[in-house]
Image (cartoon, rainbow, N blue to C red; front, side, top):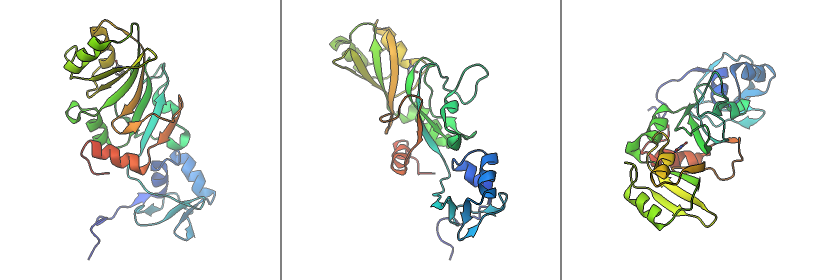
Length: 244
Ligand code: URA
């Protein structure tokens, strides 16, 4: 009897598989194959157009076994001045921050940050995941550090807990150094700025430090990294999806 998994036959060109796993553009992965750096099982791959089922064969690049993932998920630390977009005619975009090995045209944004805002942006090839992470129905928490014109007091925290400017209740905590931490569960246009404007304390600087279970921690400004398996599992679970 056929195994429960992988019942359908999948045949994908080797260069497509490698490009989809973050080994670079189709041109670059073709060069990898031609340079003899790719093995399929115990034989050398010679034809980048060879069709394989990446879930059934062992692929090695430079003798390292490739763990095939249908989708890629990338965290980026966006600096101010960069657009949350995958392409733009005038301004640099978050996709420009990825190293060539992670560059994939199919990566889409799971939520935006304003051009002047900083912090965590998630990119994923899974459109359904991106949709759920941004749709208000799934109430995914987004956590921000906020620098305001005037200090945050108890009345402000109480107002946020009730809900300001028509937004859902949010958790606002004043930090000792004059900053504040806010956790919202929607992702509306200019939401945090509008909430602080509603209490008369405009935002001077905004940094997103968390989206659901994924934290910015450890990513320097302008850096990106692929999410690890545990993070991917937590991310899918947070929006009631099976890992794709
Ligand atoms: N809220 C804002 O006002 N701006 C952002 O970029 C994100 C949340």
